[in-house]
Length: 126
Image 1: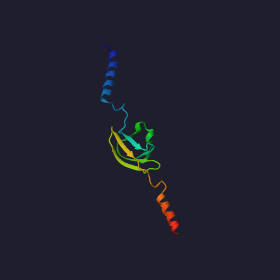
Image 2: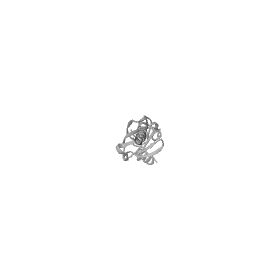
Image 3: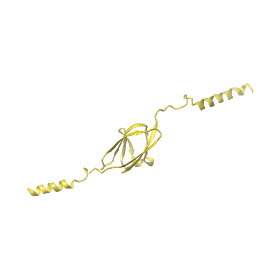
Image 4: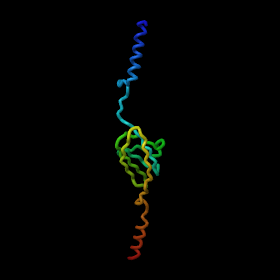
């Protein structure tokens, strides 16, 4: 084989071999491991907080699925007129985790008719 062809072939073989072995000089270094939370929440207008950081509204994420870093996470769901829901989760890397939540209406936000009735009864007694 002529010398002029030997060098390009050797270079090509070296690069191919290095790529097959996973040469770290050309691979991005990212030690984060991602997982996914599928949030099936009623109401779907609930705001999502993960580790105290706002990440958006449930119904604005495609398929109501949020990417999260794997590990222990604190999930909080907030919606006007509903009690805040908190969950401590152990999210495993590379997996989809599904959480189904029907948030409970906050009874303290509506008019307290019983209290108004009691107040009017007390006024009638005077």
